[in-house]
Image (cartoon, rainbow, N blue to C red; front, side, top):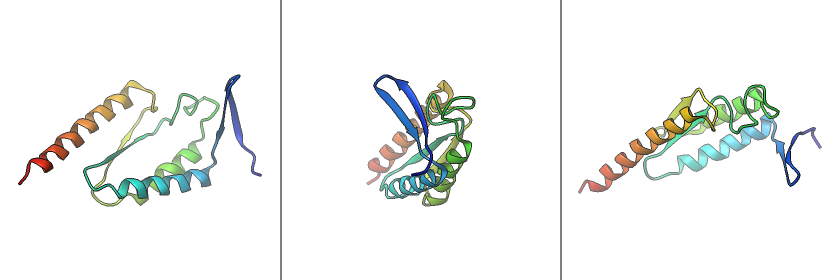
Length: 117
């Protein structure tokens, strides 16, 4: 079994980091699922990490694994899916603001499509 990065969060929660190859595979699956959307969709990538412990200087920071995930998502999304890269961690207010902006845009687009005869 490959060596794993393990982080004990508290006495009842321990998390294990996936490696770059697994991240690539996950990105491919994610992109195929999003690409199957029949309505408006968007994907936002938090370039500074996917959790509080996946941030520069934190125990789960693995730039290689995150890059593999994001590259697979970029490569696998069908044309027409909006991709937005945000220089923030998923838990940062800047990322939350970007998500709200994209949600508002997608919501407006979806309702405009439904309103057309």
